Image 1 (cartoon, protein in one colour):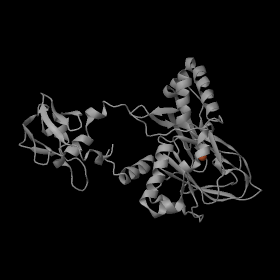
Image 2: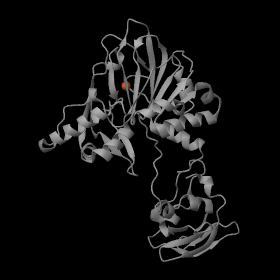
Image 3: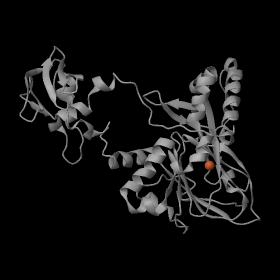
Image 4: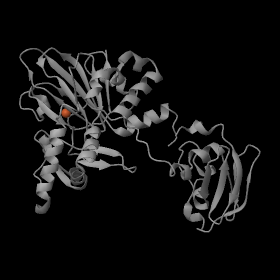
Length: 384
Ligand SMILES: [Fe+2]
């Protein structure tokens, strides 16, 4: 909800019961605010620059209640508390924005616009020109919105200088460092520590599933692509698990409730990274949060023997759907493209290419989801 949406609303009447202040709004909505919640969120006890709560909840008892309460001349709520001689003033817009009665009376609406192969016919929805992003906050907002809503955006006509990806990414925030370094170089090299650094085809996957939190976003910046082959593939993992949930609910449940093991044995850093997580996870709204999927890094499965066949059946179903043409979009990366995507939602793959036919060089960057969403919240003036 936008903080400014409630600007024209006013409070018609206030009342109280033994636990809460009751507010009747000019648009007919009714809100309930519990006393402890109100006292805990008194705006006077927030540090002015750090914007952190300074109030100690244990300084008041659970029986705290208003001694007096009223609407002031600006239509805001004032409360004089029964303890500590403290007075609080709550702006009506703030009360409305943070109203948990209204929020919990409405059905959750997902921000994610899930897509299948039909996205191939509306590529303009997920494309943006480099110059638009660099020249205005509106351009940056559009890019961040494509990333947040669709999980994918292809930036066109970016410069192709080495490391120039930093120039645009710094408009969002800092990158996420990994042992592949930043940027990582996607080229054909001898003795690779990752199959991306070969000319082989890559099945659809997310990167770094063996981390506790795999990078939220990935940016593949194409500097040159003259080689034959190497077309890119993208699949909206949220769309695929949504299809699985609706059409194969038992398989969906198995993948939601079974931890699998992801393993990376990187010979260049002398490390063995192991992570146990389910392939599908949900967020606090029961919306899709993650799809964690990479055949290359799947460890040896070790669930209960009674569950093993169920797991393999569900895993095979998902594996086949994630490579089903009904869900895939295909495109060829051109020099100056930055293929940007939610790495824990959109799976990416690549067809084999002929390393002798020409040059192919991508530079990759990672960024956490927090940075994308935090910047978008700020630009949209959202106050979650
Ligand atoms: Fe990858």
